[in-house]
Image (cartoon, rainbow, N blue to C red):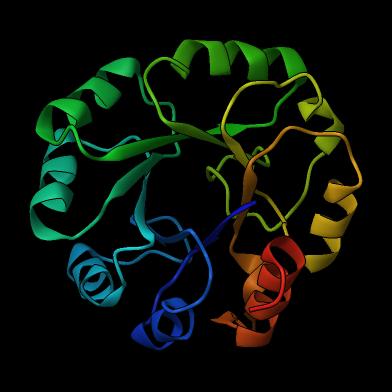
Length: 209
């Protein structure tokens, strides 16, 4: 199972996670998010994270100047689009740097809408994240009915939205075809990353360290 820990805001929290057995670390560059970090800070983060981890920046309906700045001034390896971006935005990123991985986050509105959105993006992006619907484009810490995912096959997608140790256990008992989890609030205590919570989830999904 792939593990993406997301929403890092401080060097202290990045230091806690950078050597752990996870696949990706994410940083949110969206000013309306409580976990917003600026480009200079993201550069500091990406400079100290080892290359065995994806370094993911989360953007919401970004302007091309923002995309350019991120590609040119950080060590990011992956861009996660979390808004209502058209395929042309994906194409623009590919033109600027063909080596970047692109993730598209989708809200779990209902089964048919989800399948339609996946069909729209699946030939353009590398991975999906399916999150709890919200007007603020995620970050709610709330779950949704995971059973609406049971018709999604042959697609690389992570489950997000209120994911924590207990909810992962519940999801693992369902017959879904997800490839991993995207976790932010579920690895925090008092708005800081909690090493014990991170280690518990890693042990659950990847075995003992």
